[in-house]
Length: 378
Image (tube, rainbow, N blue to C red; front, side, top):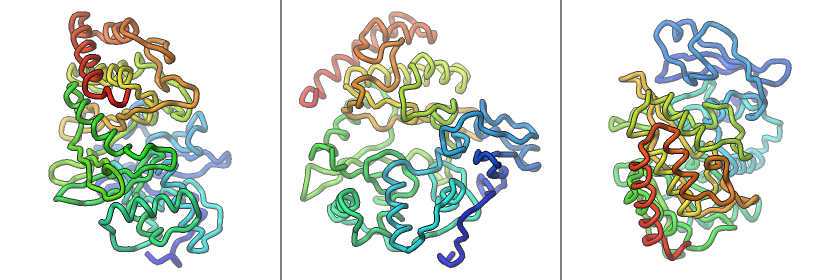
């Protein structure tokens, strides 16, 4: 689609899954975005967000206004800080100054979002070749963060997809795999890529499920962290997914959750799947002992498996050393966000139905593993 065919100011939008119509989004008079399932989808589809959008013939309207009027499941398709910055710069470069609606943003995501939901109309704002020089791309990202100019802004925008988070990143196909590769933000330490890679190795040693990770070489720093995407299966089919923030319609920008809630959500969604409950417990312990305090509601995701019509916990991501501006965990542990310890961790695990001995063994193994493997960062 050429830019001349992009008609901003959309009032409605079609939502699809595997080229099937799921339903329609429409702006209401209060600037909230209503949703209704398609008649065909109601016959043999599934609920795309079990708590907010049960499979019913009705018009759903968000009760709150956390996501510019969207339900959380559709907000998951939109890029966060980095992607929004790129879009703003690209629109300005192409002299598109009109104020865009949240439905325009979804149309600009189109078929390039994370997960399996797609949107029509699908507005392709730029078309350009991918770039494989990671040091060059990192420098281009730095220019975008520091100025309004970057020589290959279109390429950065095209390669960013709708990936979330604040740090610059690209989505690319290398070595027969689909990767997300991150670059340093202006506030990051120079070895942030190696740090996150070391964290991923330690997390895997701690029994936490993650996709393949890699430290891509660089002439400018110790390397760039990359992780294989988990929103597609072995046959490259895309998988429907939802963050905890989306499922609970929670504002991830502020502390709004406790790990008790996450454990309960895991139990309900997965049908008491022991492996997933235990893995969520491991992630909580790892975040506490490794000083990952930016553990907000969008950093936990669930995948829908259509073959079994069940949800499961996704592989972990964004495990790194981090602080918050308020100095506490974004997700509290048994009510304690400032200095949670073994007592709080045990309470969360036991209340979720885990055995005391099991919790204690996992907790102490992760504590000692993190202390040994990540000692240079703690």
